[in-house]
Image (cartoon, rainbow, N blue to C red; front, side, top):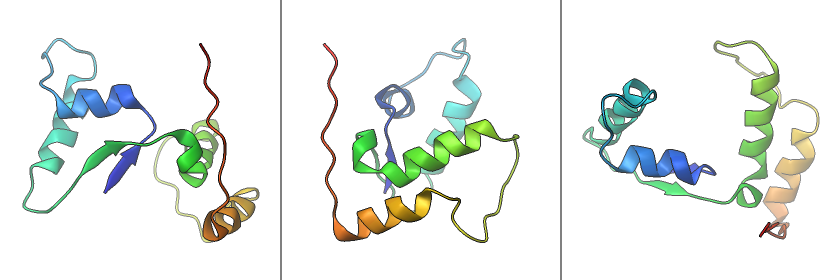
Length: 96
């Protein structure tokens, strides 16, 4: 199960994309991965439902590009993992 808090990204991968779209190549690669001989589901989830992934995405954006292998979770992530394990719920912030 692949979850993303970007509904736009999920929709791009699940629908046909025009070759002139600037994200065409990466979206095409994602689509090819989904078509492999395995069971894979791509779905949208709200950021509040997966704070650990949101933290890591924000943390990675602050660093350099490339592969980073972590021996231990960075700082604040420990608390988020613990909260996830005990089922802490977070309200959804809606802006209208």
